[in-house]
Length: 440
Image: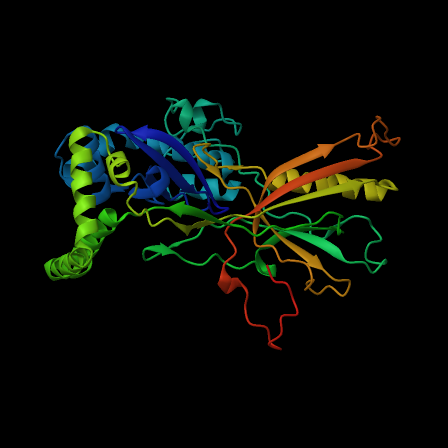
């Protein structure tokens, strides 16, 4: 949502709607919330006067939800009669609360938007009587009736989108010329659909980093690359059925005919074995004894063609533990900022309406040499989610604080997990054609 817009919600004609008002112009857009599918624009309120216009999308949704068959002209009349007043109330409440005084004066005197209060005279549109400039609760709406409670404009979005850059512990880490680990926080962005799959995840660059923390490289750093393999079976009967289906799907009836011919040749080549297996299979099915009949009578089983097959990649976890023991007041403040940085960054983000929760910010973790270049001899880490964060306020086993109440030591433990697996293509060819870095 842009900085110059505010919104409110209310059900309109049994539809969950969201009103978004431009607090600079007074123009309003009415959307129907579609859940995970986003939202659809259904009506617009003019920035001048009392004009609202419904569109075709609203006609379809209204008729579907209410079992009617109204035309756009008929629905426009219904909208003006039953819903326009409430929407004007909601728009006026937003303008009166969030718009600058000069904007409210223009919208009341010139644009004539219903319910807007002139901050100088205290009058509303259509009102010629001067009233106190401090509006009563009734005057904050377009009419003397109150809008529904659920349509109160939400408090301004206080979500933090810009965190401190280069929080550092210890404060003299730059002077010691030691290797570091850097945690860059970035705003989460989901992958976009691309045909039958998904587009590549956007790369992390300096432009989308919203905060960072620099700490010494801890002990016990590890990474584990793993993929999932599992045993699978496909006996000859299942293989034959699959071949027929695959031939038909890929090449139609000709493909099915060709597959059937190949199966017939295989049967002919080993007819005694096949005859015995088929007979036992039918007899087992008829008697309910299954595959055991073949084993009991011949001591054999149908070859299951067992094979270990690749099933899925895995997402790598990473764990870090740091003990932060500030040595002075400035360093203590930095430690507090670092703890807050991770705690707030990993927290889900509420939307202004509280209808949805947005994904927390994510992190790009880098090991760096003392010359600020990426460490080539420790494995790289892809963009991660911070899935767990623990603070031990008494890591030394006793409660101890400085004079201002800051703990003498904190221990933080963090659990990260990569957003996507590591692929073969992530190991790009090096310029010197030598494997002189570990990669992922």
